[in-house]
Length: 289
Image 1 (cartoon, rainbow, N blue to C red):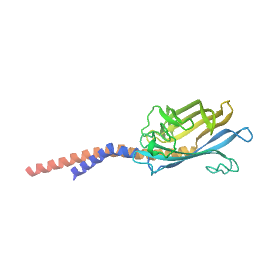
Image 2 (cartoon, rainbow, N blue to C red):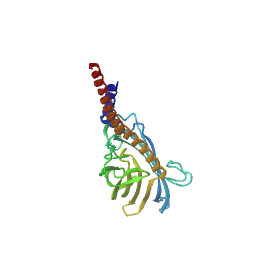
Image 3 (tube, one colour):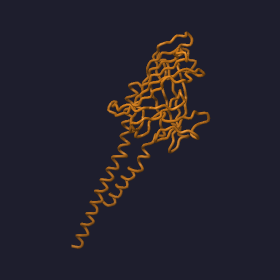
C-alpha cells in the first residue's frame, strides 16, 4: 500500500512540475472584467472655442470571445468610454447625450497569446480589425524586470514599456513600468492631425501579469499647439484594491499548483516509498528468520 501511495504521489509531483504550469499560467477563457479610472481633463469645447477644466471618469470593459478563442490564443472585445463626471452620470452615454457628457467612446477587438500576452493577428481577428504588436491588456505570466513592447492605440504602433522599479501595493509586490510618448505626430481626433504626448506608469503583478494600477498624463494638441485634450487619469483606489485581491487569489492558486503540490508529491512520495520498501524488506527478513 505504501509503495503504491509513494508512486502515486511522485506522479502527482511530476505532473504538477511539468504539466500543471502550462495549464494554470494561461489567461482564463471566461475573462470578463470592468476597470474604472478617474481624473481631470482640460478639454476644448468646440461650441465656445474655450478650454474647459473638467472632472472625468473612464470605464473599460473587457470580455473574452470564447468562440474565437482556443487553447493557446484568447480573443477580447473591449469597450472604452470617457465621460464628464458630472451629476449621476452612468459609465457611458450616447453621442447625442443632451448634457454633452461624452468625451470619447470606442470598441476594439484584439487577440493575445494566453501565456506570453503578446498580440496575435490573422485568423483570430474579424475582418477590418486592426492588427497589433506587443502587449495590450496585460503582461506575461512570470513578468521580468525588463522592457516590453506595449501597444499604443493612438499611434497604431508599439512603444517601450521600460522597467522602472519594484513597489509594494497593499502587501502585493509589483513591477512598475514607464511608458513615454514625446510629441509624436498622430490623428488626435478623427480626421484631424496633431501632436500627441503621453507619460504612463503601469504597476504589474509579476506572477499573473495583471495590471494592478495605472496612471497616465496625456496631451493632444493641434499642430499649432492649441490644446484639444490634456488628460490626467488613473485607476480608482477601489479598483486598485480589487486588483490586488484578485492577484493575490490567482497567485496563491498558481503557487499551490506549481510549488506546494510538487513539494508534497516528491517529499511525500519519497517517504512513502522508503517506508514501503523498509516494510517489505523487514517482512522478508522475518520470513527467513
